[in-house]
Length: 307
Image (cartoon, rainbow, N blue to C red):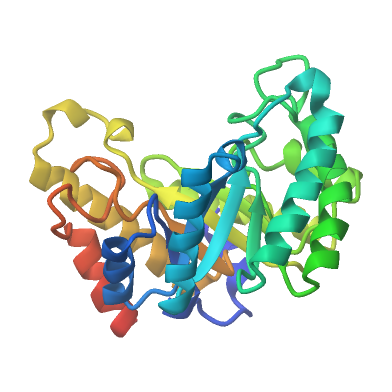
C-alpha cells in the first residue's frame, strides 16, 4: 500500500506551504490574525444557506468575508444546509440551490473557490439520500451529479473563473459515491474528500491513494483536494486516560506526519486541516480557548516558513 502511494505522487512536484489551508469557524479579526501569523492564506469557511435570510447573519457573514479578502486570505467557501425541503423535494432544492449559488458567486467575484455541500454522502442533508439505507452510495453520487448539472453552469455563467469544488466525500471511495459521480458525468473543477481516523496519517494516505486510483481509471486529471483532515480526542484509543500534554503530542504527530507525507508524495493538490479553533482545548483545534497556541500550531508555523 505504501509503495503504491509513493508511485502515484512520484512524478508530481512536492506540495508547498502555499497549497496548505485550514478550516475556520470564524473569520473575525482574531482568527484572521492567527491565520496570517501562520503564514497561511487558504482558509475554508462556511456559508449556511438556511441562515441567509436572517439579516444579522447575512450582514455579519458579508463583513467577515470582505475582511478576510482584504487581509489577503483566499477563502474556500463551503455552502450547505438547505432552508427547506427534504428527500421528497430534492429536485426543487437542487434548482433553488443553483439559483442561490449563481447569486452568491456574482455577488462575491473575489471568492475563487466554492464547495457545494459538505459530506453530503453521509450526513448534513437528506436531499442526496443520506440517512436512507435504501439509497446506495452510488445512487447518492448520481443524485449529487444531478444537482451539479444545474449548479455548475449557473455558477460559471456568474463567474467563469470560479472553481466548483465537490463537497468533501466522507464515505468509502472505491465503488461508491465517486463511481456514481463518474457514471452520471458530474460537472466540477475539483474533487474533494475528508480524512479522519487514528492513526491519521494512515487514513490520509489510504484515502488519497484510492481516490487517485479511481481517478486514473476514469482518466480524470482534475485536482484532488483534501478539505478536512484532523485528529480528534475521541478517536484515540484510551483517550479518557490521556493528559492534555499527551493529547497535544498525538495531535502534533498527526499533523506533522500527514503534511510531511503529502509534501513527499503529492497525493493531494491542496489540503485544509481541521480546524483553527474549536472551542475546546482537547479536540481538533490548533488554538486553545484562551487564545494560546497548541504545539501543532507552533510546528506548522515553522514548517510553513522552512518546509
